[in-house]
Image 1 (tube, rainbow, N blue to C red):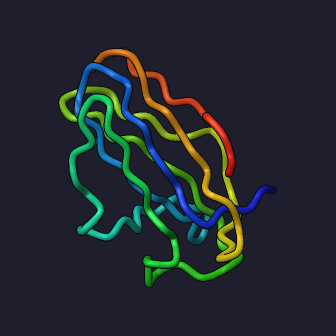
Image 2: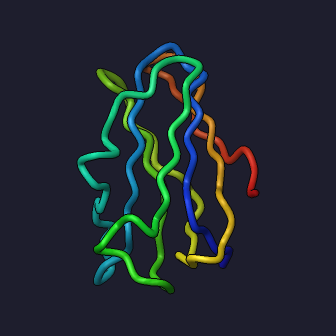
Length: 109
């Protein structure tokens, strides 16, 4: 499984999005996004979250990204990663419309 230090979400869709981080805890995905990161990402904007800034997360835990689409259909990434403070930034892009958004892995830095 690939490693990650931070997630970046680019919004190229016709809606407002928010970035969330989930970790696997006892077989269930739990939202561990700090309130300070839950800000709107408007069209053409992006937001990065450094996983080192999440106190509930320890190296070696499984994480994934969720894109919340305000007033629309949320999308959860298919990919799972292992949190590693020395890992890369993983970039996702969300596109489409409020009712038909598409989340795709863009690149790993």
